[in-house]
Length: 217
Image (cartoon, helix red, strand yellow):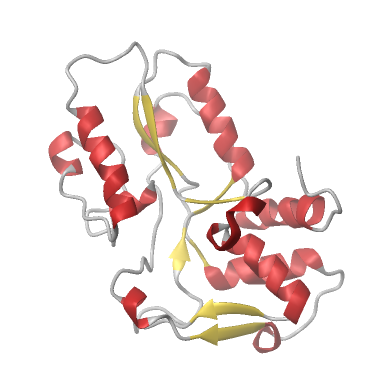
């Protein structure tokens, strides 16, 4: 999980030594539970022919509907707009980020599945790998793309469709304002497929799944 990177003080590089990996400082117990596995896996002297650990960044796409509040922001943005005509985003509490300008590496589930299939079919490749796109985009970009994909001839002002709400105080000190996967390691082991842009992924998700009566693959 990308949660292992914490606030990103050490970067988002998956091609590091066990000693460098130990320096990561997750922001919560969930992140630490993933980090402890990574630490354990890399210190094993005996390993199977192939083993792969993956660090998922912000995954979105079909079949996440059971996750309720833990579903992706694309899912929530679409449903909020459909119900209320507005999408709620957190205000920023850091001067270098505008409201809704917090950045994430959003990756479409279809790309995630392709990467996992690549490892299943490449049994000589082992290690811990990031699965993101290598590009950080804002929550504002995400929300506007979800809205535009759900409407024909969209022309509303941003201020009419996005409402910024205060971030809960207990979250402010442990909130990731920026994540972006380093993807060189995956490319170096032979993965060559192109990743969906945020626009492409959201359009496919909204128009071919969320907007349909049958939302499943």
